[in-house]
Length: 283
Image (cartoon, rainbow, N blue to C red; front, side, top):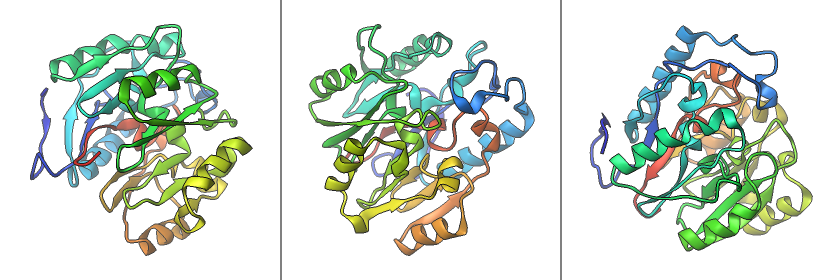
């Protein structure tokens, strides 16, 4: 595989793909978070925050690196590169032209890493792990639609990946990707912001997750992208959150690692957006 950071055991640790923020900045507006923030991100502070996140993830997982490219400032958000499952990748088809320029770089990385790549028709937007998250056993895929990913992609994903796909409609433009408001945790719990979904989608979530397994975050934590969390086993890595939510996660047996990621929030991303899950035993 392309170069990266290795941890203890390659067979037991999860792995993530990250991209250093060398060319990161807010250069256009394609989500509400970017409004008023064009050219207002600090490159130096973004680098410090990314390095802190990278160090935190390296403590619990292998991290492989994607080389940044000029002209694609959002390439740092590798969760949107595609969706990995059982050694295959479904490449993203971006909704916005500004991000569509990233697709060839992601495809080249997957192929160089020996990962088979599937593609969807270019007219059907699908934004990778940003809008598609597996349950820990890898048998059910929660798939978002409404802002960036088209509902028609869900049936195609089910056919390509051979898994159950459950559609969830996003209704709040601030939570334009599923991974900004929904995070299935390793022990079967769920971290989510209910108001980001329509009533039918909330009913689907509640039918699958019993009440005692659902952690419904308050709006202030949701707006800090608390649900945009990287989880590796019992470790949850995320942006700064309220003491109450941190206590709730710790009471459920999680180690909570908070990393300040305010520069990336200006572009509409946080911890999970900056990490694409590549592999985990049993997933």
